[in-house]
Image (cartoon, rainbow, N blue to C red; front, side):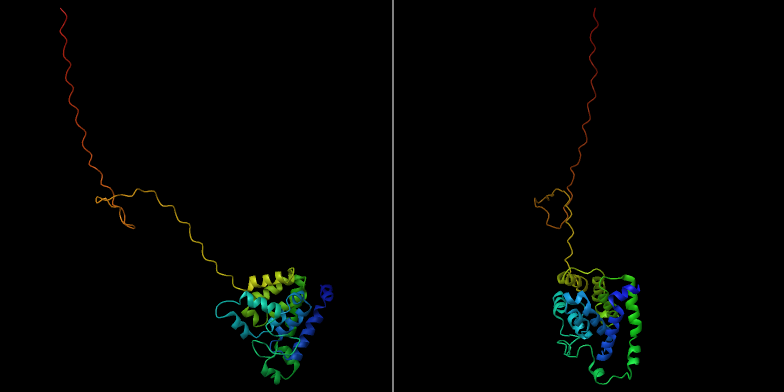
Length: 254
């Protein structure tokens, strides 16, 4: 197990992400660490916007998702390939939120936490790191960086808004898809609401064979009206047979 962690330098990369989050005074450090870990993931190579997507403020997602539906496949595809306007490695502002990436305007000026140790303890970085490495050791994914990123991202507000986005990162880290198009398809299939297909109409039952009765007026009954049952002709009593006449007696021969 130690060999697996050493091979992928996972502990060092997680520590690097924690240090970057502390230095940036990130308002959501778990999302910041997840974005840092994705730097060495094939997911980032194919979907450069994914790292930025993890840092998008929750309000932007709520706006994109609307009141009851999830984000559209076009919005998600653009966000995955181009990013929603945030790059954790560069200073700048989100096109959607207007806030600096990964930081809170209030916290970036004067943080209420007085020491780095208190900051680390507040966000339980050690517990989060241990959980990420334990999960990787148990699953041994093909892409441990992406898998660990999903573990950290699961601790963010994004997991409450789009849990399937996080689970798809984890899934693609275990079973990588072949190329960007396949990755985008996996995300849109799980994250975006499926188009409601019209319910199939039940097959019409064959109409029962019946003769159309004609009323005494000679008109067929109107549609929807039950045809009056035909009156049966009275059965005439059978004629009584006349009693057979006795046969005539032949005269006796003399």
